[in-house]
Amino acid sequence: MSSKRKHNEINGDPVPDKHLYKAGGPKDDDVYFMAVALLFAKKSLDPNTKVGACIVNQEGNIVGIGYNKMPNGCEDEFPWERKAENRLDTKYPYVCHAELNAIMNKTSMDVKGCTIYVTLYPCNECAKLIIQSGIRHVVYLTNKYPDTEETQASQRLLDAAGITHRQRNDPCSLLSSIDPSAE
Image (cartoon, rainbow, N blue to C red; front, side):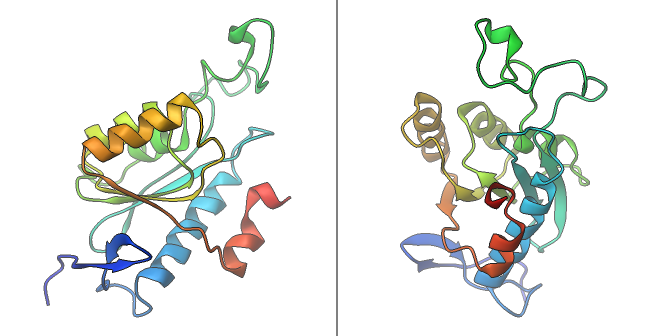
């Protein structure tokens, strides 16, 4: 049996037809790997937006995990504020996004051909990291900022690179029970 993924159409989005590593198929795999991303989102110290990411290779092995956090060794040096008179007094210039941390924390040589499960639609900066790393599929739980220029740029980048991106918009009770935004 080949380890290559075949594709079919479910809800209009290309998804793996069947995984060799999970008897339940793509929907169960989505739940499992999104649950891992949600669990790692819980580790974030950001009081407003907790994001987690889980990178999975073609064999169904987790090869990278991450969550949004300040750079290593700087955890207590920068604010988590969203708004301030001076942008340097907000989290935005300093925080490392979940996707960046998952790619940096990878356990394999590369993540080419992998799928990233992320709890929030990637921003344009993370879309560039995803493209450059060779990840081919993005599965996201929510898109809180669909009308921002950053999200629109991200969509354009992912489309131009041929990276599939689809929403896992039917979280089951497992996902809902560990969703950090449900607190």
